[in-house]
Length: 208
Image (cartoon, rainbow, N blue to C red; front, top):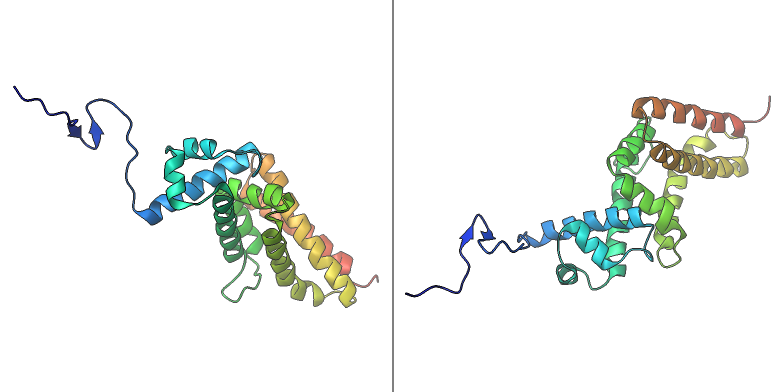
């Protein structure tokens, strides 16, 4: 009696019980790998401490699958940075790239939804020489978006520049600490952070 050497398949799983990586459309797989890389990089402590094997395990694939989409760990890390930068900037600004009254709340909402991406940008990539340039550009864009609001009330251009940089630094560091504290009450956190920003705005005004 002839017995086929090929495994029988039921719902995509061979009866042999071996694990088979489910095929995805190329763009969907790429997004999944960037998701997994973002999580792994942030959890492990940045680029140098994270291996492709750890990323593959997070994604539930083999390293060979990663190499079908990215030529190196560095390219994958860059893709994670690029995506996080774009998402954060578009979250915090309007269609014209300007800050709005909702910017703080929206940044907190995004950081709460994607904490690994926020930490990746500002806790790890920011301090890694090979990748810090992109974070510096993002930071400068955020400072530039804040500057017109601060300049409208500042006593001089120098104090406006100081206030815009301080505003950006305080917001980012406050969100990092908020994430580390378990992300308590996003609405209340936004209100508290707004009070901090108001304090900076008061500081750039001419002393009465």
